[in-house]
Length: 439
Ligand code: C5P
Picture (cartoon, rainbow, N blue to C red):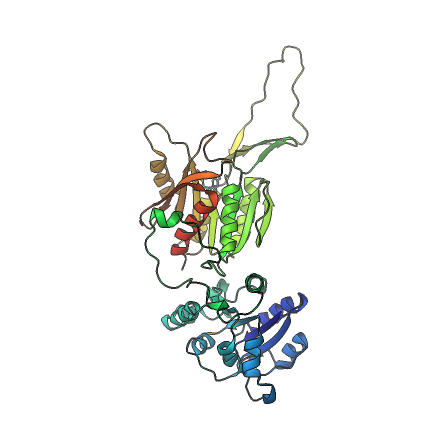
């Protein structure tokens, strides 16, 4: 496929060299179009050596080939990484004062921007308005990651990792194998306009195929149920099948998210475009979630995590005693508390609004307290942004394909009730509500 890699003038330009390698190593034909400012950070020889092609920033080189029109028209995908505030402003206003902005005006294929800049510049209303304009016109904008910026400062504004940008591009290339004049206008705005408050009916509608409102957002989903080993052959576990968590991961990926799935003892096929890490115990699940927490924009804790684990693990299989007089003896298993992973994530996030954290509560109800009342209490106790409450019992929910849930919001917005419905529909409803909280 023909890729144009636009590079604008930010310190993160060096990471674009890694992105270029990912494209060329997977067989794509890449033309690099740096802006003049980008060449202050990484020079033309680097781009020429890595792409095997000459590089120009202005429209006055090899004019007989009309590169300012040809490159954009022939491209299967244009990706600008890093996209600076200035480049986004020029693109949003349709300027054509260098080769890259000409390419952006002539391209009819998917166009991806990976912004990188200081937090203040990213959050400035001018930049946000430019991003919204580009999204409304069909561009894909990968939200910048949070973390260390050029100096000692931290915050949203980092260029996403080259592998993450590459994953978004690969998905778009698979969805749009041939450029068409309207291909990049198919998708609705993503970070743009505020959405109507959720209504149960709207939330339970299945998402139309091709919806792209999670494009570039980083989503971590935990799924399944932890197992806490007693000895090499026995464990304490629960009835979670992992179906709801897998449906969440599948739908988030289908809606454009970069998805990491942390899977605890699930025997389901891994959904397409989802990276999976397998864990067994609550402690392993905690370590995996912590590793991904800094990467994530949204964490959905759908896994059923054991609250307790055996205090001791027997290295060899625990045997019945055959001592005379001891035939009825049974061992006592002492349990210790597992960490509350969800509450720990909320505590570590502190006052920040990022990442958005979603918990699940499987409730059976108890005398004098409804499932919903228990859910409200749990939402307050855990401090997560959303709590998805469902009623469980031996035959209700676990392993079933249909589910009924209530999605409670910490910000006081009305709850959303969904179901009975398939787990994919529930997943879309949860993602719809979470998308409104993500900014
Ligand atoms: O307290 P309860 O187990 O009902 O809370 C359920 C929610 O908390 C789920 O989102 C589950 O993934 C999470 N959880 C956790 N760590 C635990 C127990 C539950 O993160 N030890």
